[in-house]
Length: 241
Image 1 (tube, rainbow, N blue to C red):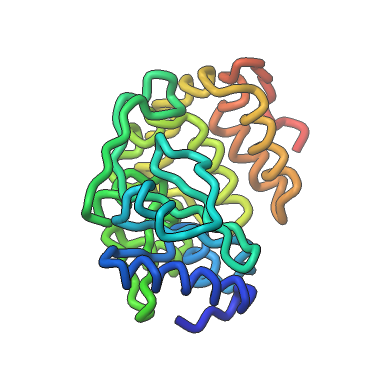
Image 2 (image 1 turned 90 degrees about the horizontal axis):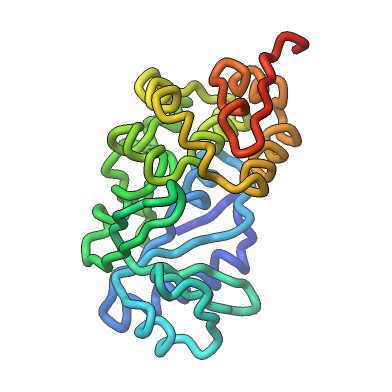
């Protein structure tokens, strides 16, 4: 794969991890934001890898690694001093706190792993051969400049209410439109933001305001009524925009 928007040394190091996993008999792909940004021609700052290998196998294959999230299948592998999150294919269930899954099950089908992700533009894998695995049409949504949830929007926002703010952030920073079904799902589930820690909400708001189109993001927040439904309600209407 010829990466154009990533540090070539980082891409080469990630490729070696994928090769090593493949040579050991496991599937492995680049996944998520790095694919999205490469396809958009935006700088790629980090690279995540998804694999059929379980965490203990990943740790046995790479001498320099950190068990950063074993309960969720994530191991941080250090290759040429670049950190890469390597995560086992998984499904999730039981989001009692509207943020973290209570149950994680490792699976062998990468498409099942992609099914749990938030938006189609983040649910794309890329192999060493340059072939995309894109079961939910994320590449087409990138072309059409759309933000669309994977599957039913209400379900994705029930699982993790912070995704509603991420939805607004992606739409504003990328100058994309939010599809009608995703926007309606956001409005139906917006009360769930009350379950999210103020610090996490602030982090997303900061990224919106510091992004390239802050007024667009703030206008969407005003229309959504999200800020009035957080743990620290901020009933701002956007009238002064």
